[in-house]
Image 1 (tube, rainbow, N blue to C red):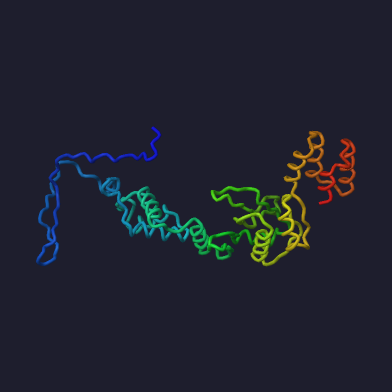
Image 2: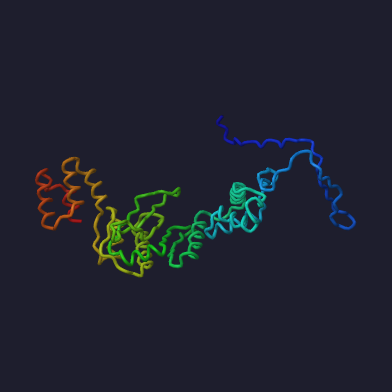
Length: 315
């Protein structure tokens, strides 16, 4: 059934006519608590102490416990780790009066009711918590006019050390939107001595304007001690190009091979040409060999005056 408010109803606890009970009253005259009735005899087997937390009546998580867990989460500690810490203090999971899933449910409920920190506050708290383990982590962010998170950049200590060793050339673009806010995700990568990809930094930016890219490059350079680059590889976005020319004018700016290959496929609908073009950009040739093979390729398909071929060669 497609019911909008469908909810599983809890089943009633099966009664077995057990007379075991405890009754405590507060006396009106003395305001003291007094036990008025206590029957310890059960007509059924009792649950083992190690299984008491499975009882529905013991599944309620105290609000103070949930608040403590949320405080730890803001410091970058997972819910499961927070519960494990409490279990250690209590002498084991069997001594906790609730299960891990009960804590997850309680925390989720309180976040909705109390309008607790947003995703942006949560990620900033998480990154701040990482600084206790990685003192070299770098985090910078920018707020918009409404005090909302606009841009966020971060790089851990390993990324910064890698850049000092292998940061002569980088590649980055913002063509991937992988979050529910549809914000561009920018990842700066390079190559180490084993020709393996290494990440130098990441950023979530508010838009893909020239000003935003300028902010991103300024923060990136500051993070890396203003060590300048020799080569910057990007896609064909003019706004990135303007920002690179402003802040990295001494670096060589080129389009990355992957974007060039995609561009060739879209603009030149000749399979044999595209195969030869891929050979040009992915095979190592000397400058003289490259010029000779490029001229031969253009002449073979009559593309010497093709505007796309001329424009991309000049850039």
